[in-house]
Image 1 (cartoon, rainbow, N blue to C red):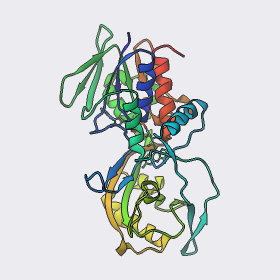
Image 2 (cartoon, rainbow, N blue to C red; image 1 turned 90 degrees about the vertical axis):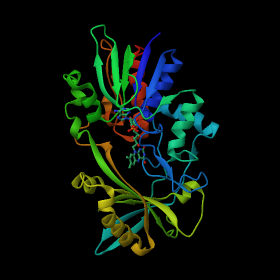
Image 3 (cartoon, helix red, strand yellow; image 1 turned 60 degrees about the horizontal axis):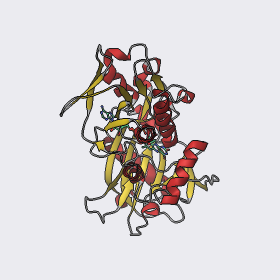
Image 4 (cartoon, rainbow, N blue to C red; image 1 turned 90 degrees about the horizontal axis):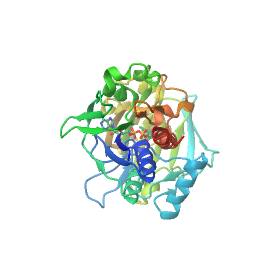
Length: 339
Ligand SMILES: Cc1cc2nc3c(=O)[nH]c(=O)nc-3n(C[C@H](O)[C@H](O)[C@H](O)COP(=O)(O)OP(=O)(O)OC[C@H]3O[C@@H](n4cnc5c(N)ncnc54)[C@H](O)[C@@H]3O)c2cc1C
């Protein structure tokens, strides 16, 4: 029986774990965070379970490929996923003002009914998969016997015959150190992913608008979480994402430092007042989206069956939740010789 260590329990790690378990492999899965899900991140305003929740990483996803579609349909049937149909507008600056137009796109958007993070956690629970959290791997070495050993900031090392890595490119390269030499997808690791600054802001609702795609400027996206969580109050929780250009220009700055500029742009575009807004959460996703050094999305994953090493993650598959899922599943199948 194959004995496989999966590092990272985001969507790619989850898809790999599901595939490998179904194939009869023995897996161990670790994540440095306090809970699985990675960039599918949902939190509450306060720890109180009745408090409002918000998604501040991935907002929704789409399912285009047939394999992912089958899996998504199962989740829809089981209530682990629901459709989200926000009234989306596009916003673009025009002669000192902002032009809002209803977005013509009517694609299917999928979300977890209790947030994106719960979709991952519900799936892991449904498959009986356990994740050892708060285990940050800091080194991975292959011994002369071919066994891999991962070391962690705390706790005992883990040895396994096979390893599947899903952290962002530069973290994967750091973990492998000298063993990363010759792995071409890691050559441009520092540029493989771009940053995104994210704010969650308590602000008034906007009449007839649940989400906004910004065509240019400092922001790329704003969404009223109330339309997902179903809570209606005077102040709604808006998630704001900075544009790739703005975040790349300020990639070393924390989200708190950029909050004033992002709020001012949101206020200018929506005609809300900054004085009616309060930042609830600010986060810089250092590795948010595929960057200029990301491999072509057809790469999807990297596997060396001889060394029994696999590398997966959205950055190898064009970004997005679906890319991460296809990457993790594809890497798992190749690692055990199914494809
Ligand atoms: C702001 C933002 C908005 C987005 N919006 C969308 C969207 O609307 N739709 C969409 O489809 N996608 C969106 N995405 C992208 C989507 O979130 C990702 O494509 C997907 O979640 C990536 O999954 P993954 O498993 O490849 O990586 P991750 O989710 O990053 O998982 C990697 C995991 O590895 C763990 N890890 C890292 N290093 C170590 C280590 N040393 N030891 C142990 N564990 C480690 C991390 O904690 C993490 O859990 C968005 C992302 C961001 C940041």
